[in-house]
Amino acid sequence: MNAVERVEVVLPGRVEPEGLEIRYGQPVPVPGTGQVLIGMEATGVSFAEQQMRRGRYFDQPPFPFVPGYDLVGTVLAVGAGVGPDLLGKRVAAMTRTGGWASHVVVDADDAVGVPKGVSPAEAETAVVNGITAWQMLHRKARVRAGHTVLVHGANGGVGSILVQLALGAGAEVIGTASTRHHDALRALGVTPVDYRGADVPARVRELAPGGVDAVFDHVGGRSVTHSWRLLAPGGTVVSYGSAATRDDEGSGLWPVLRLLGRVWLWNWLPNGRHAYFFNVWAGRALSRNRFRARLRGDLTQVFAALQRGEIAARVAAELPLARASEAMRLAESGTVAGKVVLVP
Image (cartoon, rainbow, N blue to C red):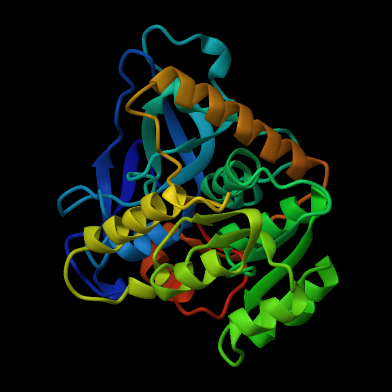
């Protein structure tokens, strides 16, 4: 790769993974005031990009654009107003879009230092996935020792971090996954439930007759209603996606609006239970400084847990940026545990 040229992956429209375009020889962007230029070392394939290629992510930009929800890399240049001490430092950043490129400009205040001893791919698994898991567990559900929690998709990018953080907090964890992942979940201390071959609500009620203290649901649709009904008094359901509607036609906003409507209604019921629709960007428009401070503090906590070995990075596969189509197919296959990572 020529050091003075940028390589980027472009999502040109609603396409199959093979429709992603690789563009070489693009000019390297120059950081403006308060910005830094990052040489990407790892970026991930998340559920957001899977929805974006279908045109179903609720606030995605118009086509064409460069996807990429987060990245890890080294600061190559700084703009005016940014101290030179950031040069050469490895940092992580959430971008929402734009991360699938060899060189990316972000605001310096959005760059969070990556601790020594954590590789770029390892750190990448814990950026948006780690922030999502940490904030849902500690800021929304407030899980603590003695609680019993249910994690849907316990083998996935967010789910695999969620179960480890919940176990670290002293909770009992029930996790749904296909049977091929059950042995790995048991090894962690998770009680697995087959989401394909079992009546999940009935099985969870057998395991937790009094209900669970928290459910983390990325499925959406009917699953969220089942999750609500599985709660113990005072319990919390946190919905953070709509995987069940990923392949639906029509508006990508409607499933989100329905989830928000259910959450609003449930929170009005006088039964002491709580419901949230979680989005990691919530509150950014109201208070950018508070959002940044919270993100920096929470991601630093996640990286520290990763560095100490309290959570393990689950890298499903590392593929070069030029094989983004293959990476997307793999991430959507449902056959891998953890996160598919793209590298330069």
